Length: 386
Image (cartoon, rainbow, N blue to C red):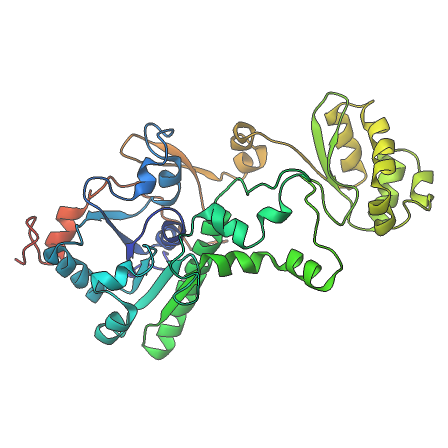
């Protein structure tokens, strides 16, 4: 079963946020018609050329879609888009602020013409307010949401290594559209929704927000360590490989001292007998931990941590992650067709026990489906009504 089979999504999308949302709808069986500029298409196609000459961003979030190339500056192309929307269930867009309105496809116009249509707009800051027209790239949203202020080392604030603002907005657009589809089954009517990248990422900033608002200080930038828990983070083993670990409670702390440090007396030291004391005296505690770990290689350290049932991880490179034994054993990889041949792709992370399939169809070329879609909706290749 494909849960969204029969649902048609029309998307004026680019970059990451909207394409990430629509790819997940396509994963569940929705038909996603991606409207692109003739020739160049979605500019994310040209972010890099690392995947057999294609963009790593693009192949990640654009499989299982149909691409139609339309020049929406031309009235004939606008007629095609309007016809697509008349038959669609969902319209999603993340063009520059006001761009869709200027094309004549504002939410107010579409809601009047097509009351069944679910309309989702993704923007940087929302449709009103002093920041509405401000450019909103992922890094800039990370800064405005305060994420960069708490990420990195004490000396160097850093952005997340992935487009986390775009991804969060895409996730809320995806879940919002699913919610609207359920609501439409009850009311028979579509809805208009908007997702702001700032507001999406703001939701994920809950812990540091409350910590700062109700505490006396803001969280420190602590690299890969934790600002308020210790020991929690990276420690160097004797083979010069990092091992990451996390202590969450006093029971684990006692186990750590007994089985990993093999020195139960450390747990009773008044400098370390509570998490707050360990944080206050972490430099002294780090010396004790390092003195043990430096005598062991990383595998031996992890063996001790496992024996003590202490959470731990190795620092995998991306190439090591691709070969992760857990992903391989759980059969998480599939092959997806692209214009440049087959590539590996992870299947979606929600695993259904039975009965629900996942779509893993090809990544399209720019305008690959233009002719077939035009014909289906009553136009010829010259974009004239048949």
